[in-house]
View 1 (tube, rainbow, N blue to C red):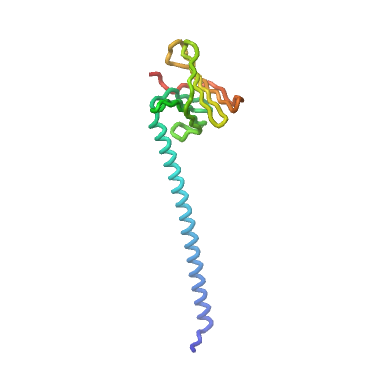
View 2: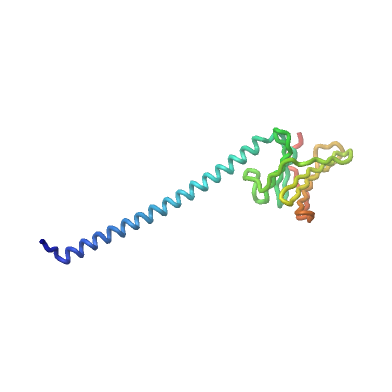
Length: 168
């Protein structure tokens, strides 16, 4: 039987040990890169999904009825191609190029008086959104727009909106 000198054995173990540490470090680095890549892919999928939903929302729009904003909200009321009223709302600083914070369907329109005053009412999840349009003058296409947000029966917001839609 051949005897291997101890220094040679120590050198061999050191070499194997270093090789194992390098391999482990490479595995850790590869795993970290895989996790980072997975996170980037998930973010891209989420972003693409949100954009797809937004494109679908705008594609379903038959006619925009109200588009307005103030320092707190941007809102849109649209009539979908199926004839449903849809309310979409973005809290500032979000814009209509992003996914809305709230989307509600099947709103009601309440017209009052002969001046053309209208209230658009939407509700969901114990919240109600009432958008009131008051013509500047009789039969005018320009209107004052007010938004009221209720939580239950408690008023959470009431304010004047700036009309972003140009009259037809």
